[in-house]
Image 1 (cartoon, rainbow, N blue to C red):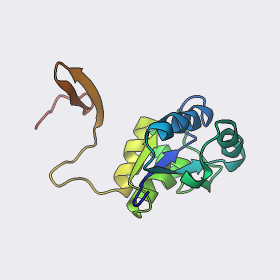
Image 2 (image 1 turned 180 degrees about the horizontal axis):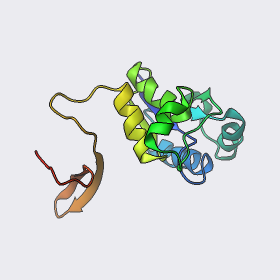
Image 3 (image 1 turned 180 degrees about the vertical axis):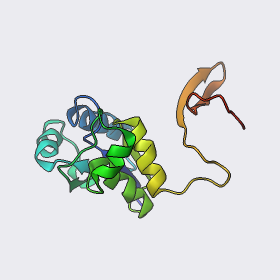
Length: 154
């Protein structure tokens, strides 16, 4: 592996975390041999799961934090919670060029606010979007969800 892709993982976000998140890494790592994972979350919960799912330890780095953004948190309260949550630290790792991308199954509103506080936007783009793949007759399309609003532009 000459120059692997590094993905930051918010292991504490979403339902049944970190178990489902670590299981997702296991599934992804089988198909993507050129990817390493920097996992943010509670080490005492994550380490047994890494053992259980038999992940390749040389492709994993764990950054311990006990603080998390919860689903019930508002986006603003999540941002105010501090810079030591698994979500904030995983996003910050992209800002510091320690990782190439971030994956979180956590609070979407909080993810958008914390990302906007930490990362720069593309020129002339002022709001983040969720993207998904949508199959078509010839392959796949990328579909963007820009949120519900009445003032839409290009």
